[in-house]
Image (cartoon, rainbow, N blue to C red; front, side, top):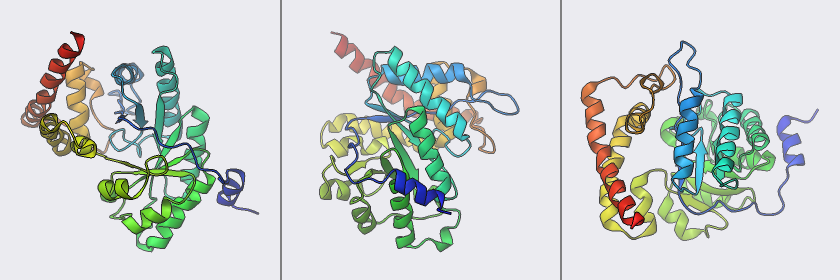
Length: 298
């Protein structure tokens, strides 16, 4: 009997190039949980946060990425996040807002199931991390074959997510990216070799996405003064970790205190000293945003 991968590749074979990844700013959304023992998604806070992102004018939203705590989320929860985001975007007059959903799994089969679920829920792209449980067996060819098989079977265009620190150190090298860029259903890479990829590939065919905001302006090669401010803020998010990022966003946007923790076993962000430190880092950017909003309102 044919495998699930074979079935996927046959039914979703891609002879024509997928639609390119849209240019612009695609913001990763946090996922907020309640304070119950089971830490269910706090849908009231989640709606507020997604509405805030949509209204900010970004070009797309990334759900269930690293900061969105992809791995602790169930497939059903990820689908519900996509549906909620599409509903809010439609309510806000932006029904075509690009939605990218992070996939997870320990096998190609699992990841393909996530890709199909993303399509069913209404996502536009999938963000695919290498399945690294058997990292000791994955050489460069095996990693490339994994992404090619996922892209063959995925009903949505694939964005490669290269993040060695959460994938047992597995790194996708530049020659590997050159190989994967030839696949018609792979549209880009996030957080890897941004400068070289941008220099080697047209964004309409294979995009290079910076994974951190301190890359934003260097990627655009302008507005250096604003970049300095953004780089200071990025230190807060980087050193604060996912729990610190969630805590400071919730603090500044007035979200409930009980909705600020990551799903366990990720530790809570409870140090008063650390809380004050990250607030001080991020408020630099808050002040700059206030100034720019006043200028735009004139």
